[in-house]
Image 1 (cartoon, rainbow, N blue to C red):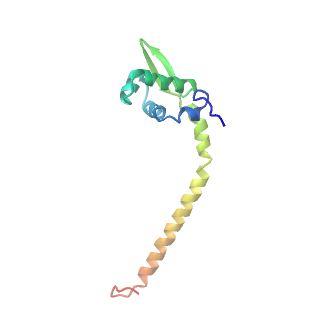
Image 2 (image 1 turned 60 degrees about the vertical axis):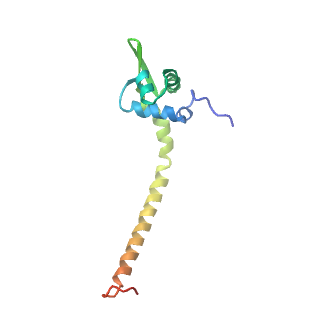
Image 3 (image 1 turned 180 degrees about the vertical axis):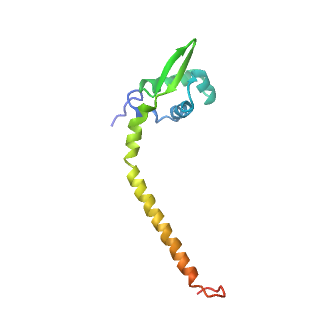
Length: 124
């Protein structure tokens, strides 16, 4: 099955680690392309290429400020990812509840075993 273009699908766009790093940087506020490039040790054309992809899938918004392009995160565009991950929430909650119950049963078992030890501390 052919993969969708990175510029038409949010999932494909964020599959690239540098793009995820850019999104993480933008959670702290607006940044210019040069600030992003410097923070991620990229050259400016590389950063611009990644930002163009993120802009095309509407994960970032860009505005011109003098000669600089300033980028801002569009977090509402992450909703499809949030919704997709959300379907696994019930599964993980169930598994964590099962793990908690198991750990509690182990603890209860250890406490019961300790209570059966003779007063002199020797094992049974």
